[in-house]
Image (cartoon, rainbow, N blue to C red; front, side, top):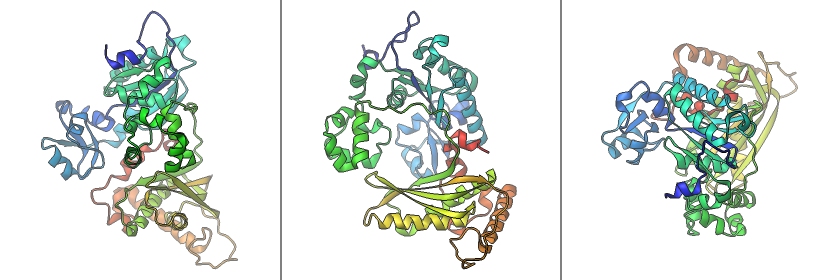
Length: 433
């Protein structure tokens, strides 16, 4: 009997076995699978979505080392037979919506965390549809039948373990973790299967000879705290023992609009303002499209040791101005970096919160210097909002790439399109009004 057969609950039709009730449903190689619906002749071959940069790669391409974010020229060298296909962003959204509508037939308790994955709590559904494993099986069958897409599902007691189980199930599989054998299932797996353990954290754990989740579990929590901070160390230790009390959150209040960018340790400091400019451009555009403006601007900075800090600023007049967001965010980034001298950031995030509906800017009384670039209610701010409106109108007619900040437009070559990045925005935020 294989290891997976021993460590997962067998799927049975005759009795309702004791199972976890959290499902993690994850579409397999989603962007590639969706694109191949129009190119069935390429199924089973190494395929990538994109061109100048790889946006997604099929499992056959991944076997050659092709990964998302890789330059297209590099991918072609690694995999000479690689075929590139174009993706349709509207198709991606429609297929995602159709997939999670299938899940909603079985439970209203769904937390969609990206365009291609969601958690489902089926604890209140078993009396209607049978055990969680049967619900997972039916979801897989119906998604395949209605969308043509393969989907993997993990079933467990916690969100963390359900996500790990869906990774183990890939491609196109189902893994149900037996509640009595969770640790036995979890500990032999590679430590990088833990949600949030990327290359930097993995390399640091390797200095302690940590290769599996079991190795991590055997490290003293104080050792992890000394390396990853009080919260980060405890979090890693808890996950290694499947301690994860987080519930499935069905509704996230659309109280902010944000974006983030991970850029690695090689980004020169002179390019950091460009990252902030790109994020501000994306956020400002989305706010204005929704007819919203916000008073609080927050930046998040993550460093190479995977610890993160946030800095916030609240303005007197709500803003959706790209320039205002950029200026305030860059000031906050500088404050944050000054508090951690010598440490290298690898991710910037910006969010705008305390949102309100607003069609027109309400000017402040002229009690301050009128040309203060950081104020959001003076005549300079009004000029910026007028300019934003003109830019939005040009983009609406000729496409987003037709006009934008020079620091962004002149450096876009080969990057991931913002339209693609924004597919990662949760569905609740995309549809918020």
